Image (cartoon, rainbow, N blue to C red; front, side):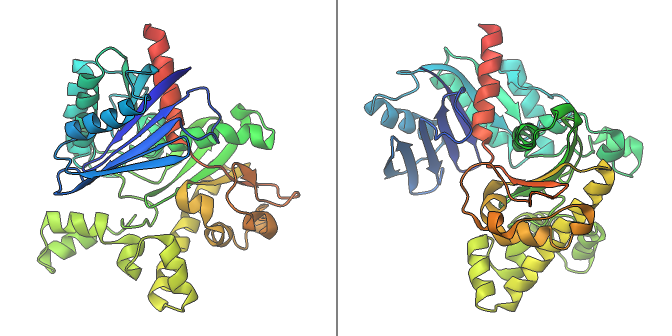
Length: 401
């Protein structure tokens, strides 16, 4: 059997899977794992295979050491990348700018082009490059393919993509709406039409990717026409630790009146805001427990989260003109029944009717949770970005073989 290796390299972690590109979205990966706490005194490598979990705790000083140690663990079990038929390695790259719209076969020139985009994603692209360089060195004889988070939104309509600032300043500094979570939005939206029995080229839908990071998209006839994240993944919806949209004047105020530095504000808005900033926690399971215990901060955080979510749903309904489906995905979207119900509460006048009994069912694969007579179908579709990356990487590899 042929597989694809999928690598998602973060600043201090590496997520990986070995996936059959022909698998169904609901199938478990052949192998999955996580390298954590890279560069810290004590690291952790977790491998899941055949229903078992293997954990090794040892220092992991670099991404290179992390992948090398992981491959040793896999080799010892006879499932290492050099022992299997790996047709391609797919690498998640957060920012492709306006340069990359499609998955790209990686060579030295492509690596340098991704490096040139670091100013647009200083927290993400350097780590993505680390993973690419290490994996290419360890596995030099297979094709490596970059799959870009921004790719799906590369050709947004100008009215949605451009900010109303001086055009010369925007062009010089590459400022525009790029959008993120594109692999997830593309994967989920592609499944909706078949599930509701419509032609994909005549389907208008809203996709809500609600995890610790959260984003929304409006997709018309297979193409995105708007999305909530912008130049960076900070924009849009209220998230676990990110503020989402705020008045930009707040930043000037914090500099002038609060005496805060740019780095302090960056940390505030990206890591200490959102649900965590309002309630003290960013895990929705903890938030729900606090709400059940009548914690007013948690209840306020939840209401701010839902209010912003409904704003985007409403604006995209107007932008699309006709909505055939609204789909929830990612950790919160797939598992928090209250978020789904409250996000679409009291919208029957617009043809949106959630069936409470269907909505209460546990997360068990793609499903419709709207009533039979709801004009707008409401769905829950688990995202599978790793499978999507594996499929894209295998397709590029097939073209060059």
